[in-house]
Length: 367
Image (cartoon, rainbow, N blue to C red):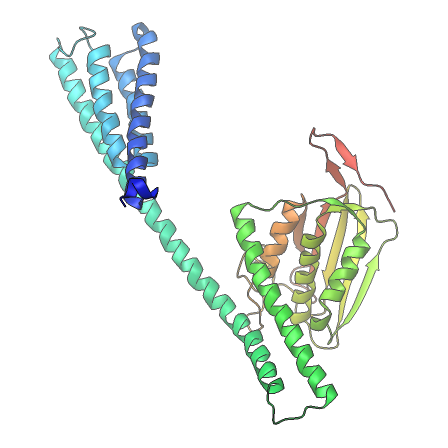
C-alpha cells in the first residue's frame, strides 16, 4: 500500500508543503505590495520603491529562510524593472543609469537575504544551545532530589517485603510513613517541574474564585507538616481580611513552597511565622524564618529558576520561581523584605478585586 492509500503523510511531504507555502506567501506579498505601489507610482522614485522591496526581502529572509528571500529578490527586481522603470510595462530599460540601479538593487537584495538567513540560522543554533544547556542544568539540579526519595521508598519497601523478618507495629508504621512522606515529596517535585513548564509556556489559567485566605493557609500548613516537624509554626491572619479571588490549588502550592523554603533554610527548633494582612486593594502574605536571611545582591535574582541563596542546602531552586509565576498569574507580585538582615522574609500581594469579562470590577465580600 502506498503512502496516498494508507493516508499517512511522511515528514518529507510535510517539509515540502511547508516550503511551497513559504514561496506562495512571498509571491502573494510581493504582488500585493506591487499593486499598492503602482497606485501611488507617480509620487515614488525608483530608490523609494527599491527600499520598500528590500524591506520585504529582509523580512522574508528572517522569517522564511534564504530560498523564499531569493525569490523575493528576483520578483522585486522584475517588478521594479517592469512597473517602475521608464518605459513602464516593459522589461526594456531606456536609461543606462536605471540599468546600473537595478543591478545594484539585485546585488543588495541578494546580499541582504544571505545575511538575514545567516543570522536566522545563528539565532536558531543559539536557541538549541541554550535549550541543551537548560536540560543539563535541570537534570543536574533535580537528580539528587529525585534519587533521594526514590532510594528511601525502595529501602523501606524492600524492608517490608522481607518475609523472614517480623516487624513490630511501630517500626512497620514508621516505614510506611517514610514511604508516604517520600512519595509525597517526589510528587511535589514532579508537580513543580510541570508547573514550571506551564509557566514558561504561558499556559497558566488560574480558576479564580473568592476564598478565605485562612482556609488556604491551613491547608498549606497541613500539607507541609512533614517538612516542618523540626520547627514551630505560627499563623496570624487578620480577622478583617476579605475574601480573595484565587485558584485554591495554585495558591496552596505557593504557600507550600514558601514554607518548605523557610523550613530548609532555618535551624531546627526555630520558629516559622506566617502573617496575613489586608492592605488597601490587596491582601499581603508574609512568610518569615530565623535563618541567615537573603544577601542584598541576591534579592533581585532569588526568584529566577535554579537560584538559591544558600549553596550548601538542598533544593532545586525551582520553588521560588514557581511562586513568582503563580502569583503573577493571579495579578499579584512577590518580593523579599529586609534583604541583608537575619531571618528571610518573603512577601506577596494578591488583589482582592476581580474584574469581569467586560472589564468591570467585581469586589470580593469581606468575611
